[in-house]
Amino acid sequence: MRRLQIPELGGANAAILHRPHATVVALTRQLEAIGLQAVSYWPDLPAAARSSDYLFLDVDTAYDDQFPWPAGQAPMPTIALVGSEAPGRIEWLMNFGADAQILKPVGTGGVYSALLIARATFDARAEMADRITSLRARLGQRQTVVRAVALLAARGKSEDAAYDQLRAMAMAWRVSFEEAAERIVSNAGPQESDHG
Image 1 (spheres, helix red, strand yellow):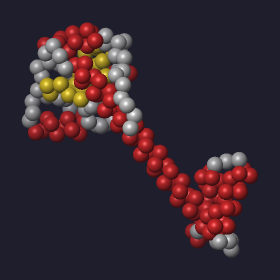
Image 2 (cartoon, helix red, strand yellow):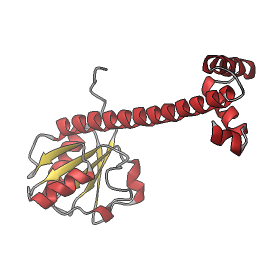
Image 3 (cartoon, one colour):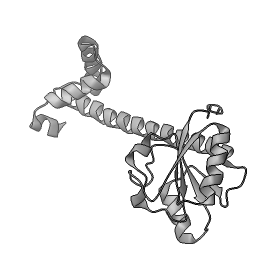
Image 4 (tube, one colour):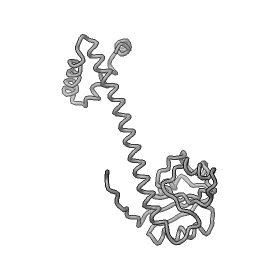
């Protein structure tokens, strides 16, 4: 497991999606003290806000159509500002997928740790999504290798011999094992592929 490090926050920017309120003033004050630039929006978050490093949002009034992305797919770490613990609001928050939270009213602390936790959670989720994508791709490639070996074996070879032939083809073509398998499968006729 890799060791987490505290990121440099100075110079980063934060979008705040919250109606004009004392919460926005207190939050902006803390962000500026940390070295972030803050811009507040209401009632909708413009597409340009996608380039923000962080997003703070008011869970009490938020709804899906305020965001220029699907629920759970924010392109930056998100911090929920939670005032109401009504079940419907908490359910919305869980489906939105915030990375950290601050309970309202926002006072003189809590923003720094929320930024760090949100960044770590967001990065871990992105890393996990990349791993899942990679594993799915590898699984798909393994199925292609099995089909290619089956196609070669259908020509009267043993599975081991077909596997060795696939390896030799990959080396001769100077491509990866999986790419060679893909070529064999894509070049097989429809009937031959069905039998494999």
